[in-house]
Amino acid sequence: LKAAEHYKRAFELRDSSGALFLEAHRDYATMMQSAGRNDEAEREWRSLLSRDPSNYHALANFGQLLLLRQPPATAEGRELLERACDHKLAEHVAFATLAQSFIAGKEWLRALDTIEKGIRLDPANTSLKTSKAGVLAGLAESLRADGKTTEAIQHHREALETDPDQYVA
Image (tube, rainbow, N blue to C red; front, side, top):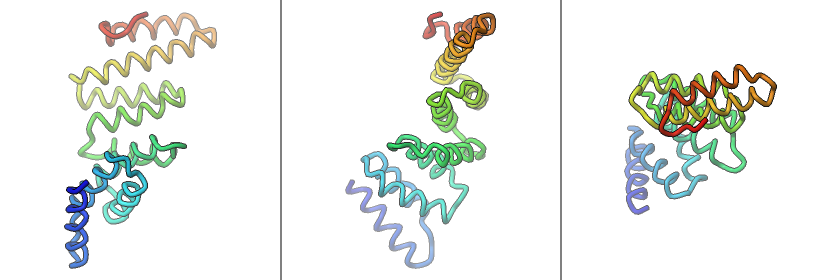
């Protein structure tokens, strides 16, 4: 946390002169979040987004923080992650995190759509393919519970084709 204090001092000095040091704000918030000091991280992410509403790192990291806190701030976290996914710097992690929020809510089709967007961004990413297989399996089980056996079998097959090493039908 000593490094975090240096980032804080750096941005305080620079901010007081009228020149924002957004990278130092970002790094400080990231360190606070990593250290579990989530209230401090949240204040810093909010401050950063008030100054730079399209900051990818703030959108993605703060969105994740909001989804992980207890109780989760699902709507706000999803909104930030959706903005991060639309950002030109979007990385597969933002898609995976957003998809996890849909999985938690058993919103299988939204999760599947989000994971597929992440895969298009990073087609070689095996963890996204594993996530897709899991989403397909969740969707299949939901369909099976609704008595839609034929559709459920199709999604189980797709899950197996998507990730044959990890998925067991």
